[in-house]
Image (cartoon, rainbow, N blue to C red):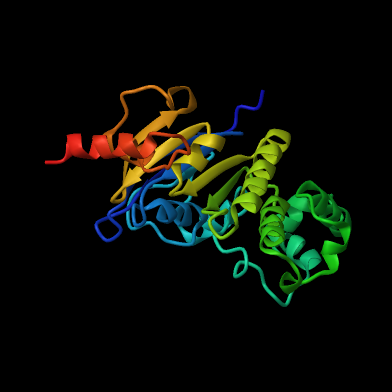
Length: 265
């Protein structure tokens, strides 16, 4: 059994007002939920090195990653899929070039050297369920769902231990978004990659994640395991998020009205 553990501790100073500590083990699917401005994306951007920590430490695989040199090393272990699949892809590059972009980094090229580029690109295209002729296309010739699959394949190209998913389905329609989530879950089972899944949609996070980290105002309020999703008591803010998810059943709106009346000051 592979015992590698990816431990992330992010603590920022007064400017970011972020206090978060959580742990993700190899092959785990951890979700972060909270309203807009709660610090979800800031955590992801600090882990991937897009934002600097003002204080505190970031540990990945037991090693501190805080300065520029060590953050460059992080790219071997951590990749990110961004919210907007359209702006995340260079429109001047074919899908083949996007999927083999990792070979342009000396570090990643050394890591992937035993995989010929053509073979690697075809394997990635197959893994994410794209037609073979996709490799010769450009982003402008792809649908939104296909673009997000390319983004996923590009993240997998670096053979990472952890992939950060920042609202990856919010720009997609419901059916396409569900298909992308199914694909991510399938690849997780096959490849054993850990995911940090950021979303404001508690229903989606509960459907795919092993654990949920609840954040508000830059602070981690709670961390709930899958086995405890339906159990209580939970933090009041988690319960508020839970009640905010609409349910397609008779009487739900009446229940919400009664609850709001009962809890009104």
